[in-house]
Image 1 (cartoon, rainbow, N blue to C red):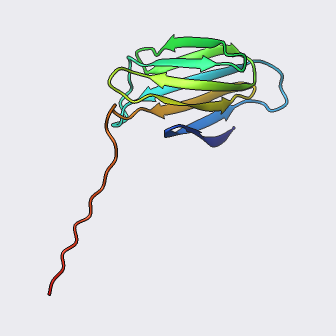
Image 2 (cartoon, helix red, strand yellow):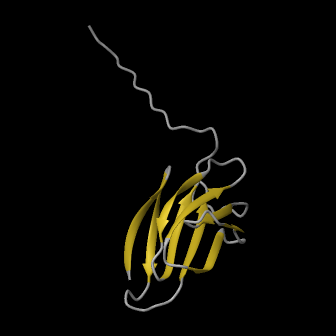
Image 3 (cartoon, one colour):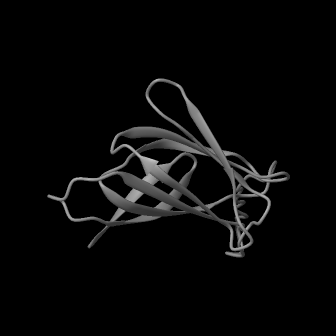
Length: 122
């Protein structure tokens, strides 16, 4: 078991792969969706699209998790959406076994800004 980090634009998500590198078999993708506070989003939809452009859509369960079973070990485009939240999407290379990712969606229309005030004393 080895952890690795994937970038799903615009978010950083943590990914753990649980697979025997030499064992044949299908891939499984487990996606957990949270809000900016870390609470699970039970209204999110996850779409996984294969290289041929065939999408598979799943709504998350009451734990904020969507599980895609029976996938081929290949590259997929992953999109995560929820009402009132910004969409997250990116490409993910699945390997044999189970890949688990956590996606934290920011609120829609909220951007990070910072301000700096400088005081000059004379």
